[in-house]
Length: 292
Image (cartoon, rainbow, N blue to C red):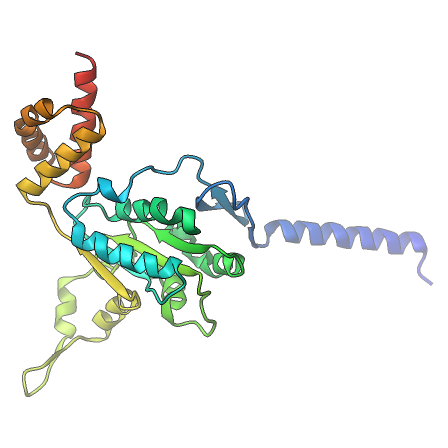
């Protein structure tokens, strides 16, 4: 018969071993305080995922965004349908940098947060945890947009397959209160190389078919039900955005008119007439006026 003291010592060692194992095994994310914010960031903390409330959410509104009315209308319509519990699509916003892709998503959050819309920002390195995030919110009454900003992948990254499966390829159905909104400068989210053009095949009647490499690269972006494209701004559009930002910073109309040439020089020096450059100029210009 084994002595009681030996059994107790063995159990204590087993419990200690289990505790050490639990500390290194991955854990699903714990539920946050859902009332703390309409927006959350998903972060890895050791071996556990954490949803952290965003304490200071960007205050940009739909009315603040100029010269992207067509893109705005399409995303607002999709988000309205989603919040109302009707059919809606995952969305990929692609195109020129600094043209308002991320700002449009943030402004939709501010518009629809009073009606239950919530946003969870997930970095591409953490997309492998998407199934756990979806399981966590599946039974919540709110509607969740998983936001992946500036998304692009290199060959073989694990987040690529996780996102592809979550969009339209898993045996499990995605919760109907979750959509994915992603922004990217790349239309197909993966780098494209000249040599891949050699994989295209031509039929006798002149049709062109992409090869397997190209098909694989476009298969992820095709899983987004809605594509919204953004384009570089013309000079007139850029000046309109500059004026809008200057008004937002409290600059008067006379000063806005006087800033026209300087804003063009600013854009020329930056090599871009994007909305981001317009905002940066307006912030600098308004700050200098405040010192006068």
